[in-house]
Amino acid sequence: MDMVVCIKQVPETTDIGWDPQTGSLIREGVPGILNPNDKNALEAALDLREKHGGLITALSMGPPQAEEALREALSMGIDRGILLSDSLFAGADTLSTSYTLGLALEKIARFDLILCGKESSDGMTAQVGPQLAELLNLPQLTCAIEITVNRSAVKIKQKLEDGFRILETCLPALITVEREINRPRIPAMDSIIEAYRDKKVQVWAGADIGCHTEHLGLKGSPTRSRKVYRKKVKRGEVTILEGEPDEAAKELIQILKQKGLL
Ligand SMILES: Cc1cc2nc3c(=O)[nH]c(=O)nc-3n(C[C@H](O)[C@H](O)[C@H](O)COP(=O)(O)OP(=O)(O)OC[C@H]3O[C@@H](n4cnc5c(N)ncnc54)[C@H](O)[C@@H]3O)c2cc1C
Image (cartoon, rainbow, N blue to C red; front, side):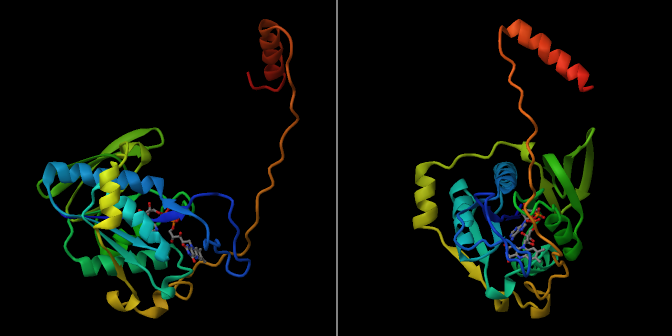
């Protein structure tokens, strides 16, 4: 069973600025990490490969430094990495990102399952997976906390706010996974060395995936940020309860009751 896992490199820190004209985050020079939720998607793919065999490809769209995220995926044990990188892709919103990833998937052509994280830790829209499924005309199963494949059918346990439900569809399909689906493996040192020294990451530009430039990057992005601002967090008054723990606890209960919190 061949799988493609879409992975994104995200900034390592939340302390980053943005371009006041476009509202885009300024990512240049900011250290990146593999989106934590995408590690769960990679782990889910590795688990399925152990049971059903096949080839796993990790696919990422981003600047050249996003290759590091693919190297990390390779060190976890995936078979090949493809980076979509071109200045034409810069400034993409989720629709344009999904369009570009979709074209690369059409070029890859051989896959039974696409796995995505539910959301990225920076954009957090959770739109790319579902949009990608729509663009490729594939069934989508979202928010998976368990995945089971049986011949040409795939079943997931989907996390809901107040419980879960079981959903099933036929392959090929796209699945987005929740963080609690698994605990991603920590690559061994020799796998890390192999990923950086011996394995290759293919880089595809716009011309390699045959895209229409009007759908790419900022130009192809219908989203416009009207205003970006840093939220001011106002800290409340701090009360320190001193004295014996029993007395302090009683006082705390009184305060909470007065505030209607108990
Ligand atoms: C006007 C505008 C301009 C922007 N300009 C830029 C820019 O210049 N540079 C930039 O990096 N971002 C830019 N962004 C942010 C960009 O749109 C999002 O980071 C991106 O589309 C993914 O959305 P998300 O982070 O909400 O992902 P989500 O939808 O929350 O991600 C869900 C899953 O989709 C997959 N996924 C998401 N993004 C990628 C990717 N790039 N490659 C592979 N898989 C992916 C992963 O599996 C991920 O877990 C811009 C946004 C707007 C609105």
